[in-house]
Length: 342
Image 1 (tube, rainbow, N blue to C red):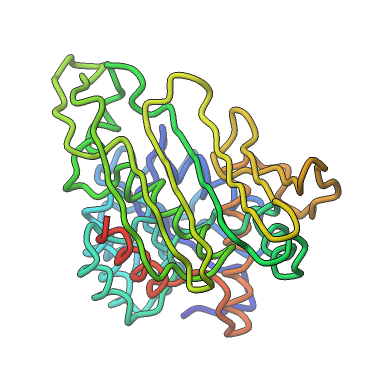
Image 2: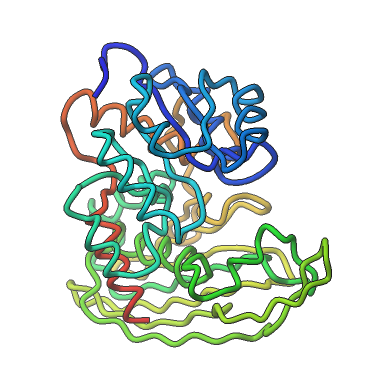
């Protein structure tokens, strides 16, 4: 590990210069933080790696993950590539003795997640750091709505609401890729339920595929859909409360999220901000909206980047102070076990 008195050097695997989660969220988050510097980027082609280095202001460019991880300027390796490659790349970074921040889903199976969990590194479950979610958790802990009786979670995305879809999303319609609705949105939803309300002790679920084929917009190639686009679950929490969850892709209307928690003394509701990240929430108790939610140093960033930036803030403190506040691979492993039930 490098000298943590200086900015923490980040190396990003999967830093596509044109599109992707790294460009939308990680790069702005790192740029906004004095705790981190962008040491290196890597893509599978030398030309795109160099383009990413110039565009994002990194010091080094690589096409090989192990070379990036072994570079002395890199303290933290961030994995933002397709899920099936996560195990290989995370393992290479760990073998190089570096800290790892891997985007969710951690792996394609619960068994793979268990194999990585012993390392105790960080997993990208950033929704729990949204200020409204943090405030909601505080209010629940304070007993503002009494004892929680039940909760209802609804969330939808517009992904897949047209027959022709961008080619770079094609793999997400393949169930074996581990990056569909159940794994991505389902994982974040179940993580939020447990973060707000406590562990799930029993879960029953079903899935459905309502749009069975798409075409690659650029080529017209047919995509046979094997990943579910609907997810419905009923859960019972350790505290006895019951929860229902309904998630779906292909929303023709405005994508939205609503989490309503019913207590013995009132209700608490989180609702999505239109045209923002699904977990960017406004908070309301009963019919009264809450004002004065915490404002932090990253609130001026786009929503997706702001939530990731909050993870980086916590992660920097963890690395410098030897604390443990950011969700780790064990958290991700437990979440994969829940998803395997589905």
